[in-house]
Image (cartoon, rainbow, N blue to C red):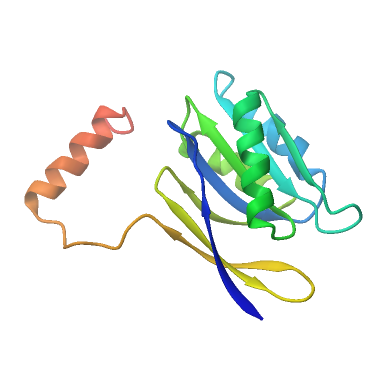
Amino acid sequence: MEIKLERIAIPEGCNVIFGQSHFIKTVEDLYEIIVASVPGAKFGIGFCEASGHCLVRGEGNDEALKQAAVQGAFNIGAGHTFLIFIKDAFPINILNAVKMCQEVCSLFCATANPVEVVLAQSEQGRGVLGVIDGSSPKGIEKEDGVAWRKDLLRKFKYKL
C-alpha cells in the first residue's frame, strides 16, 4: 500500500464539501438537495463510481463548477467519493440535507480552506484516510479573538 496526498483545487469564491456515499444515484440526489435548499446557489458535483464502468459522474447548474468538481473527483480517484463546489451559498445552508441523503455514508470536510486528501493506494484502488483542512493552530483564543469571532458571526447574519 502507498500513501498519497491530493490537493483539492477549489475554484475562486467557492466552498467545498467532500464526502463518501454508496450508490450512483447520489449524484442526482445531491443535485436535487442543493437546488431545493438554496435555489440561487451555483454548484458542481463530481462523483466517483466504484463499480461497473468506474466513471466520474457529474451534475450541476454551473458548467465551470461542474467541470472543476468532475476533475477534482477524478484526481482524488477514491471509490464512491463526491465533491461539491458551491458558490453564492455556504455549506451550512445545505450540510444537514446532504447528511440526510440516503446514500451519503460520511462527510470528510465542508470548507473554503485549502484541503489536502490523504489517500491509500492499493492494487484494488484508492481509499480516503482523512483530510487536512486548512492550517494548524497558531495560538489559543484570547478576549480580542472572542470579540472578533462573535463579530464575524453577526456580520454573516448567523447570530443576532
